[in-house]
Length: 136
Image 1 (cartoon, rainbow, N blue to C red):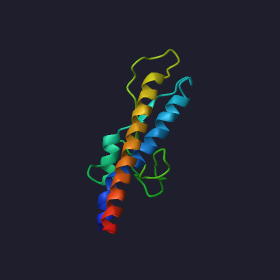
Image 2 (spheres, rainbow, N blue to C red; image 1 turned 90 degrees about the vertical axis):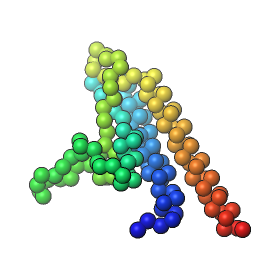
Image 3 (tube, one colour; image 1 turned 180 degrees about the vertical axis):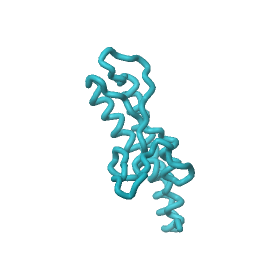
């Protein structure tokens, strides 16, 4: 059963974890901008956050074991709780089949970083409010 602290910080904890995973995926896209055949990927943040909070079902493209002898499938983070990756829609196809648009990736990375910092700011404000309440 979740405690008051879990309810207070649960959303931001899940958001930070998902934003951290998304930053890794976006950095991988930027690093592979010149790799022939590399397909740009991203995380559906809304679906991943919903799955982390338990309010929405897992995406349909998650691997399912059809036999007890099969190995479990994991997303890129190395755990079953890692969000599933989706391929980014191609805005400008290239001759070498690389779908990374460096300008879009940089903008998405900057936006993700800003939202990560905002979640940290919200957590800090809640901790300060709890400390102020405890001191009174």
